[in-house]
Length: 465
Image 1 (tube, rainbow, N blue to C red):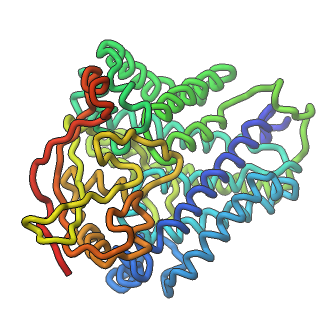
Image 2 (image 1 turned 30 degrees about the vertical axis):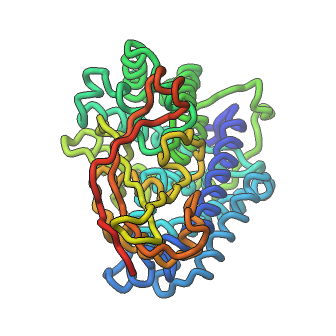
Image 3 (image 1 turned 180 degrees about the vertical axis):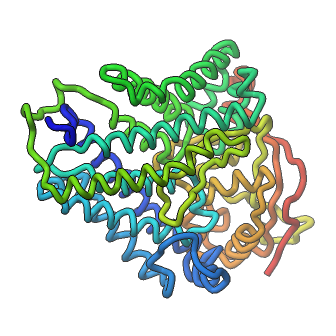
């Protein structure tokens, strides 16, 4: 191999290209299924109204001059088909410009959606997927070597993702510093999964060991991603194992899955690579493009690098309109108590009628319902309901949600797990706040319930048409 191509990198390239493409399929299908009801022409936060209100979107979008639900579906389905082709390995069989154009198309198509997605697309894993898709465009094809510079750009992305998350924890909440964060996290995280109850009830000394392990994995191990082999592969292995632990304990959309995929940029496994000595070459134009992109990322990296060492560290933010070289982080603060907003409706008098509860797909509801596994799929409404319970401003979308329920809007009801009125219109709806906690071992054996909840008051009093 010359300086440009990485030896034994075929496995890394395959996992990166196909793994990122799988996440794009999930993201685009999620948009087809959820975007129109949340942000479409008749959604909770309609894109046409948003575009008319602002001077310009936060970044490039195909919807800048015209939005329709039909166009959104065309964009999303096109992206899903292109990403599926990469999962099958079809573009990779051609010259390097074929997968390059496909990944750039995925990047631009999904950026078009994110940049009009407002609060429903304001999550860190959205911009993480965009940056990963852009970098994947410069991994080459089966006819070229895998560029070393592109692999190091991926490792720099993993470093920012992990090290940034580690720093924001230490700076943000004393629970991470005194090692008590996991006394609360599994119970109060946005969307527990079937194993979260069991993780919560692990012995507290083990929770403290988990926090120490997290600090080591996020604050020490990322530096070894740039070390010679086999140290870089070992560091990637630690990242992968810790992310798998998070997959087992909670629902964080595709954050953990894509981090696992990105960590393979540091994996060197000659026995599995299947790459002949010397490998294929790379055309001069491809080398020039990779060098130019590497120079671009080097310049853009100044802003996230400065952010890492800033006292006012930004978590999950972009420094440019193209969503490249972003800042990342998660759980800079840990909530000690869990609050949930419960939405109810009635067909009778609001004072004496029977109130029936709407069921959401992922967020906790009735105490006897076991938490479900949804990740890497992203339930956007359920996540916003968690933020709403924490006091995050949500009236811009939550009051419209209540009005949609009063109208028994079919598109909105499809976002829910259970409509207690079976498609009929309720006379009144309301929103109440409850405190939630996991049941103890004794309570669980006695009742079979996973949660104990207590009413705290009303968020929105009875509302009618």
